[in-house]
Length: 148
Image (cartoon, rainbow, N blue to C red; front, side, top):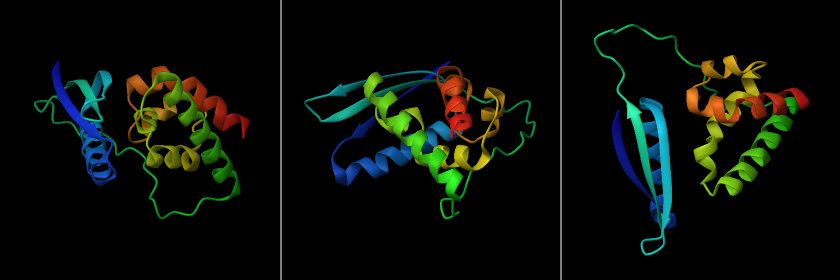
C-alpha cells in the first residue's frame, strides 16, 4: 500500500486547481482508505490517501466505466434525482466534516442520475465509484434513486 498527501487550499484562487488534482488522483488510483484534517494556520485541508497501484503485469483491459458528459441535458426525473443526491451529499459531508466532493463529485452525481443504478453492484459501473464509496454510501444512494 502506498500513501499520497495532498493539500486542498480553501482560498478561491487555489481550490479549483487543488480539487482537480485530487479528482485526477482519485480517478487514476484505487483508494483503500483516506484521512483528512483541517489545518487552521494554512486554511487548507490536508488529505492522506492510502492506495494500491494497479498491477501493470496483468495488463488486462478493464471495461470503460460510465461517466455522464457535463453538457448532457437532464430530463425532469434525472433533475429530481440529482437534486436529491446533492442534498444527501451535502448533509453527509457536514455530518462527516468533509468537503462535499469527498463524498461524490458533481460529475459522479450526474452520472448516477443518468445511469439510475438499481443495485449497489451497478455503482461499480460508474466512474469514480470504488469499493470504499460503495460500501459507505451505496445503500443510501440506491435508496435515493429508487425513491424519486
